[in-house]
Every structure is written in structure tokens, then in C-alpha cells.
Image (cartoon, helix red, strand yellow):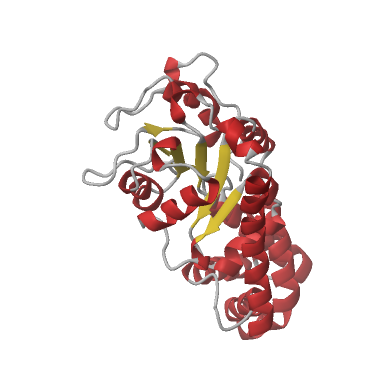
Length: 298
């Protein structure tokens, strides 16, 4: 990617956020102002992206599992060889998903050539694009999460705040058509800080005109989403842990824990009624109709 292309991409993303903010000012904040009237001052919800709204870890694993089948059926690779190739790629990709000295496409094709090895690296170009298509198939927002965002967006200011390199995160946001659900999007790669640094939360608050005491944070990582929300003195911090993940003895403590992010629809009325304990973990069995039949997004 050339410097000019990179600058244009960065400028466009910043224009999107700045234009959204400017539009609210010009219109005397018709959207945000209407959402400032929520009871008990909860006006905005900050969402993490990966493994919160989209099942990145599971989706990437499913994409590689499917690609293993394709390598076997379409290219006659032995099952064990195909599986090892995809395992090697995923390991390298997770360790280093981006390289600032080149485009995402170039970097990933290099990783695929390494994973395929001398015998099969001639397939790297076609395999890469098959993987890319599969990846975004499995990362796509599920219907229940789309509906949740649409419902919450009628009452609250929704902000996406995600850690990661700029190119990689904006690719997800654009390919998954996530922009329309949010009034503001913050990607850490565009800033000098990332979650849990309080400054990235302050930037998000400032962008949509709310105070930390008016914000709920929702995310899957204790060490970034929850710790950052606690240190930024947000109104409440809601944890959506990966399967099998447990609280740490000396780590940050969320206000509430959800089995699935869509259960937020049942939780918010409880928060609005003044439940603020940073010690008690919410049991969803307290709610009527609180069971989620939703997909895990994978």
C-alpha cells in the first residue's frame, strides 16, 4: 500500500467520524439530544467488536476448517497436510495479522505461501481469496445481533471502540457493513492509545457529547474492555466472556456478566433502575424470558 493510498484511507475514516459529529452539531443534536433523556442518565453504549459483536476466534477457526475441506477436495491434498497448512496459517495470522510496510492482501499472501510450503505455494493466491470469502461469511453479524443494535440504537447512542491495527479493523467494519449501526467508531490503530487506556474512552465520550457516568461498556476482555471501563469511571461495565473464561482473583471485576451479548436487552432496564454493584454478578435467571436462543455467531 502506498503512502498516498494509506493517507487517503485514513483521511476518509476520520472524515466519516468528524462528519457524523458535525452533522449532529448543525442539526442541534436531534439524535443525541433525544437519547439524553433516558432514565438515570444512561445515554450511550460502547461496544467492543471482536468476540463481542462478531465471533472472530470461532469464525476464523470455522473458515480454516472449511478451507481444509476445500484443499482436500479441490486440490487433492492429503487430509493431514491440508489441516496442518490451515493450522499453521491461522497461528501466524493471529500472531501478526498486519504488516504496516505492505497491504493486507500482500501480507496475508506471504503468510499463505509460508503455510503452504514449497510443494503447494503456487496455490497461495487462489487459496487466500477463498479464505477471505470464507472468513467474512463466518464473521458476519448474526440477525439477532443486528436486531439488538437496531433496537438499542433507537434509545441510546451506540459507539464502537475496538483495539487493533487500523487497516485490519476497518476492513472488518467495512466488509461486514457495521458503520450504519454506530454514531461513532474508534479504532485504536488510528490513535496513540488503545484499551484499557482511559484516553481512548475519553475520546469516544467527547465525540458523542456524553460523560463517562452516562456510558455502559460491553466487551469480552477483562484486561482491556472491563479494566478500561473501570479506570474510566463508566457507569457500568458488562462482560461477555468467551466460553470457559473465568474471573481472575486480582483482575478487574465487571458489574455484570452475560452469557451472550443479546441478553443486554434484558439487562439494561435493570441498570436503568439503579443496579450498580461492582461486586455482584448478574444471574439472568432473575429475568422472565431471559433465555437466549441466539447463535454464537460462528
